[in-house]
Length: 417
Figure 1 (cartoon, rainbow, N blue to C red):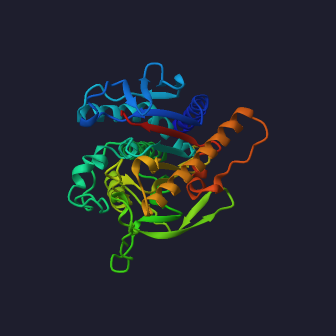
Figure 2 (cartoon, rainbow, N blue to C red):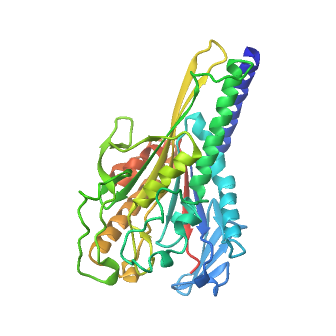
Figure 3 (cartoon, rainbow, N blue to C red):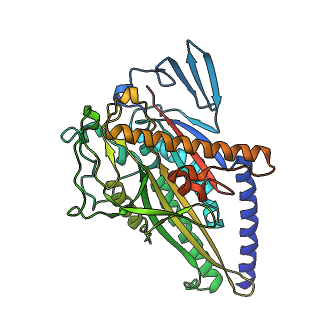
């Protein structure tokens, strides 16, 4: 058994080395473009060439390019790491199949790095209504928003029952399922190393914790620690257009953000739930999702007004075959559903909706500055340049997962109209 254990450790080391080399070639920051599945209002437009404000948009998922054709500037073609056109059929099954395909092709390979102590992040970026929440969470989080708001156009979105988990098929639920599968496989293998009978080894294992916060305006809120409705301040009414009649009440507890010496920041007092099953994890996701701030705008009936950051902390303890000692590795998996960039002249936001849009656009600009600094530093490969993480609370919280050896997938979501 000890001899087999040593061979297993050697094979794991070789696998980690080769996997890290492959992922390094792919790049630590990868940008994917995904056009969301067509809806009934989009069916009049062709699947790969759809009208935009000043021309047409052509998505080529074979060459991984997006071409913008404009009367003013002609044709401009942009190449990305990977481009996904909408599914060929406007059905739930086709959409779910593409969700699975994107996960297997792009997300699943980087998740292996988690158990090697490497941080992983997946960010959904794009304009409001482009399918970011759909990409991260799935159809259950983005279905029929117009119908859900028909009776209460200015209320915060809530699932029908917070107690019953959302039925989701996005990249996050699939990743949680895969991480638990990796955990079970790892612990069973470690048990076999400990004894021929495969009994559990109390000294080794994988511990998982989950936190869920949102960055709203200039504050950070813990979505897993809701505010008592009896003590929460009531929403106040403001003057302005139909899209900005109510200030969103806080559903989570406001938290302090504090810098740490190792880089990045921590949310002081944020809830970190220990999760021991997929069901427990998705129940926590449903609770946090219910507390997120959303609101109707003219461009999106359920517009996210905050950046949502969900983090799964992974602590791995393995036993060396030689000597019986243990080794610890810690990492985190972060999924970020960014609030949508917004053109005020289209959304006609005013009052508090306008303030939200300004904060959203400013923080997204700060994120762009950070990614630009990281990619320019990588190209020069000499003295490290300054990366402006602290220009925004969003980028400060993302620092551990979008720099250094971390693996980042940026999914740029676009609309088919």
